[in-house]
Amino acid sequence: RKEVEQDPGPFNVPEGATVAFNCTYSNSASQSFFWYRQDCRKEPKLLMSVYSSGNEDGRFTAQLNRASQYISLLIRDSKLSDSATYLCVVNILRQNNLFFGTGTRLTVIP
Amino acid sequence: NAGVTQTPKFQVLKTGQSMTLQCAQDMNHNSMYWYRQDPGMGLRLIYYSASEGTTDKGEVPNGYNVSRLNKREFSLRLESAAPSQTSVYFCASRDRDTGELFFGEGSRLTVL
Image (cartoon, rainbow over all chains, first blue to last red; front, side, top):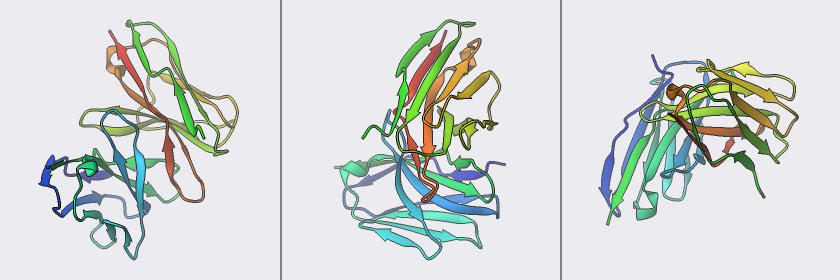
């Protein structure tokens, strides 16, 4: 079973729409959670960390549900520039590795 | 501010050839990583180095070797390239305080 699972999409949404991605993780010892953004043929870059209480950064909101072992990313008022692949990343306690989901591809349509 | 620099950006090899991917970071991070990214597979860890002088296998280490030359540099070597090693390779270093990974721009390797 994969450590991290994501719906690969693609999600095609119109500008201004709200879109949400979910990601599930299998190891209850998972400790740290992140969302990364990867543009086509580029390297992944940190979008935001995910905190237990949930956190918001402008149009982006990340939430963690430890009981159900999933994290979510909500994007409000989608912009064309939000088109990218969003990677869910999990760090397990006492492991130096970070586990990546396969990514969810978002295309925002004019 | 260079961050993580990896070379080469592109390489074409024939089966059986060897090559080394170079990676350097200027952020004074202890931990460094090599990942490969394939369609539908996500990023998979090849090797990592928690600190200078140590290296450990990741999920997919077969066919690769690494060297942590010093705190800045972490190289990945393919001794005898195979078509299955055609992939995009990313080097990364990690901020111990925030947990954030910083990636290089990637190296696209094709093995014919």
